[in-house]
Amino acid sequence: LKKIQEKYNETMKKNESIEKKMNLQDFNNKFEDIKNSMDESSQEIKDGSKNKSKKQMQKSSDKLDDLQQSMQSMIKKNKSQQHEEDESQLRQILDNLLTVSFEQEELETNLNSISFSDPKYISSLNKQIEISESFSLIKDSLYSLAKRQPSINKTVTDEIKNINSNFKKIKDSYDERNISQIHINQRFVMMHLNNLALMFAEILNNMQNQSQQKSGNPSQCKNPKNKGKGSPSMTEMK
Image (tube, rainbow, N blue to C red; front, side, top):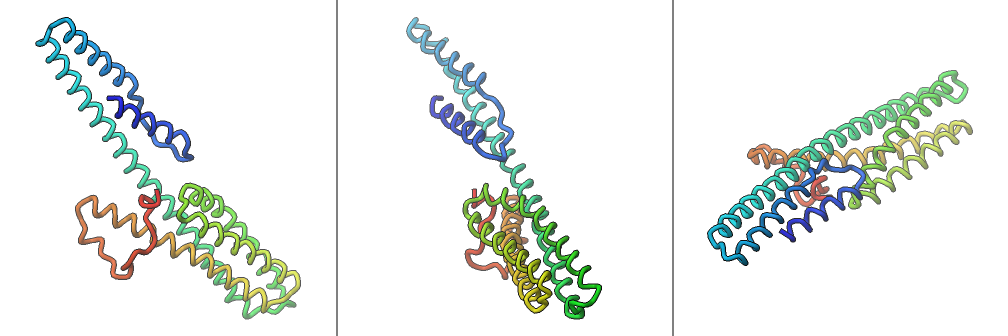
């Protein structure tokens, strides 16, 4: 009982320290009930009531089994729910990254037919600012995810820094009407956006494969394109 309670307290303490908390049930009353039942059994042994003690011990054992099953069920349910939430968040981030990347690519292509004296040049600049602002909204979700997952923290942080740096260079080049340099930095933005998108797509694929394997459909999980170690799933990163 002591070991189970220590493990439970450790789980509760860990849950308080994480940003995305699990919905954990309070089992303290059940622990107290089992402890009292075990104390009664010990007292009956001292009093010489072996039959009563045996029944009380069985009762305590049944309560302990019930407690363990309840805790395992709670943890399994929370992990499943958290897995679904992580998968949904990753899918949203991936969709947003691809949208920004496609918009950046379209703008970079359209810039080929615009000169700095063209009235459309200002419209192009305004669109570039919109793209930069769109990424800023995604950036908060990326930082939040990277903070919870140490294994991808540095990669995500470095890619964000590179994207922000190139956005600034694009803005400076627009001001200087240096179209060739704008093209260069726009392509760098797309490259770093795609690096993030590829990483999250592989993690999402791994998560979906894990879900299919747990549901008993391993044959659907085969993906010849992702042989080898690849990126970890969210579960593995935890």
